Figure: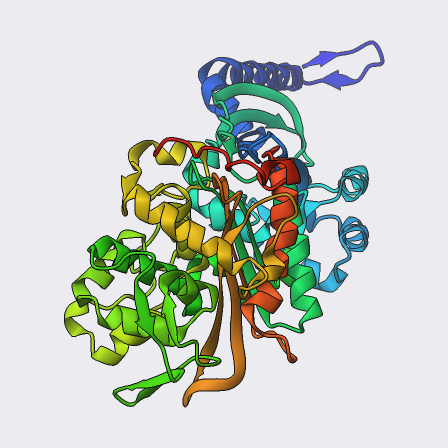
Amino acid sequence: MKMNERGTTVKPWRRTFVLAAFAFAFATVVVRGVDLQVLQQDFLRSEGEARQLRVVSLPAHRGMITDRNGEPLAMSTPVDTVWAHPGKALTDPQGLAALARVLEMDAQALRRRLERRAGREFVYLRRHVTPETGRQVAALEIPGVGLQREYHRYYPFGEVTAHVLGFTDIDDRGLAGLELAFDDHLSGQVGAKRVLQDRHGRIIRDVESIRPARPGKDLRLTIDQRIQYLAYRELKAAVVAHGARGGSLVLLDARTGGILAMANQPSFNPNNRDTLQPGRTRNRAVTDSIEPGSTMKPFTVVAALESGRFGPGSQLETGPGYFRVGEALVRDHRNYGTIDLRTLLVKSSNVGAARLALKLEPRRLWETFYAVGFGRRTGSGFPGEAHGRLRDFLYWREVEQATMAFGYGLSVSVLQLAQAYAALANDGVLVPVHFTPDEVSYREPRRVMSQATARSVVRMLEGVVSPEGTASRAAVEGYRVAGKTGTARKLGSDGYAEGRHRALFAGMAPASDPRLVMVVMIDEPAGEEYYGGQVAAPVFSRVMQGALRLMDIPPDDLPELRTVSGPERRAPA
């Protein structure tokens, strides 16, 4: 032992112990430092990145839908979506209460929702919020709560184009209409990137791009938005004015088969998913089949002319204004006596049409109906398109053959009827109907009747729109119009119902060289006016007048033109 200056005994082993302890501690720090900085560097880096690095998806912009002139009909706009990491968000009760107020949610319900999903790292809280709501959420700076960029589909014309375009779901995937039909074309490819996040889950730095987002392709339609709005407006006005259940309208370019307008009533607002009702979202002009009534008579006349046994001047006896076929009584409004084929159409004689059909072979009548598109889909590509009903002629009874001649016992869609009339307008050539210009590349036009027959029937149909015909209200000032009315009783649970009708008019203009074809159907008009010539024909007149002007189609019935022969029709397609 040694004595220090104060005379206190100092034990040598204590100093050695203290020095050894300091040396051991220093060595431990050095060894730990080497272990962390050298031996476990990769492991620790990966652990840190696992807690801060995330792979996030990059939303893909859905393609725009435009009309034939480039007018936007559907577009996707960027919006924010609020999400949360439940485990982190639950650490800030006051922040969650404030968040609930911003999102207009019940605070307790929000907390319970997060607690039920506490094991997850990502939970949607509110999809597609307004920009102001997004800013308020970001300002709260709640741990584990963030914003994600998504896209919301917007339809500038709302109800006007609703049935044609359809709509998408909240993830911007097509659910109905052309949005569904062309979903692969419009949808983009979602991208991905690796990002660095802070403790609140906010992205502070992009680390690397894994896969870039690929936007969807735009889609141009044959629809003309100007004509579409006109058709929607006039159809809706007619349905309201006549207290009708609904209605449909289709307008075609007779030369190309392009669908220029298609409207239905009642309609719906595709911008508000909360108000969507399944019954209203169906495009009834394409998906529903109806008995066409007297709008079928021109094709009965076509079958007769094509048979070679009849000509425009062939005579039919319709007196005394009715006759019985089996158990059915076929009746006219009055006794027209002996009539020719033109008068059959102008006066809309059921007796004349039935007698004419019964003089034909069933096969001939069926082949004519089938050739113009009845009993099969048009091939437009619209989801849920109806093929209608046209029974095989081998199973026809005599009464069916008679009633089909004036539009009962078979069913067609409004689009099918428009396509058939377009064949008459196009010199007997059936051009496939389509919603986009590119659709026709694989479907060729085909001749379904002779040019002479088509032109002869169109001339007859001009008489229907004259003062002596059933559709004088379909006339368009300055233009020659050809068309046919139809008034079909609706089927009920016990056969054809009293007081329930569909009023139709199908026609074309200018009749000297038809460019536009339209079919108007009003479902169950109320009141004393329910005939096609009273209800549907005026809609045709107003919409056709506007469409001819918008398409810059010259008049063919001006006073100075009446003194000379009408314009030459174009060569057959």
